[in-house]
Image (cartoon, rainbow, N blue to C red; front, side, top):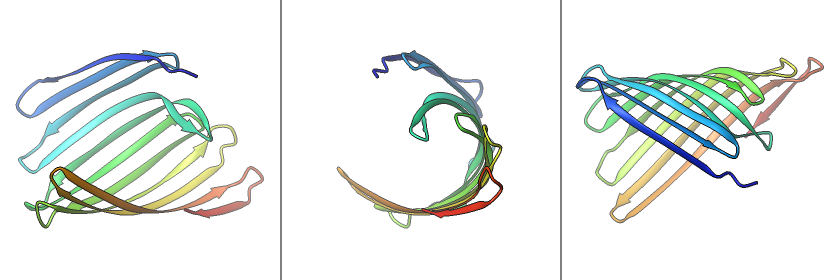
Length: 173
């Protein structure tokens, strides 16, 4: 089906350390909303909170409205390395859940960047109340030499899923 969509958004700097931004859209699939704030705690660290309500996330092959509240921080730990931590609360679609993500990025030169991240959390199926314990990790590498940019990554995910009959199944991706 077509999804004609239009929207508007913007940001406003309340002070040299606090920024707010928002956007709204509407289309054939319904409304979409995103709002957030960013606080520059220090020269190295910024904290953020945002909420998005999206009608285009695929859940088991079906499009469904899903919301996500994300809070976290990103911090420089040296001139060439940074780390982040996020907490993500999702609702709607086929499941609700809370997860935590941690990651690090390292750029030893202007051309090369390496990164790694880890996510862990629990998703609960809205219909059956079955829980899925998820652990995922990944790595990525990128190379930039203008105008060329090449990037590649790999992800490992392990889901321990409760079945409606109480048994458990495990899936590695």
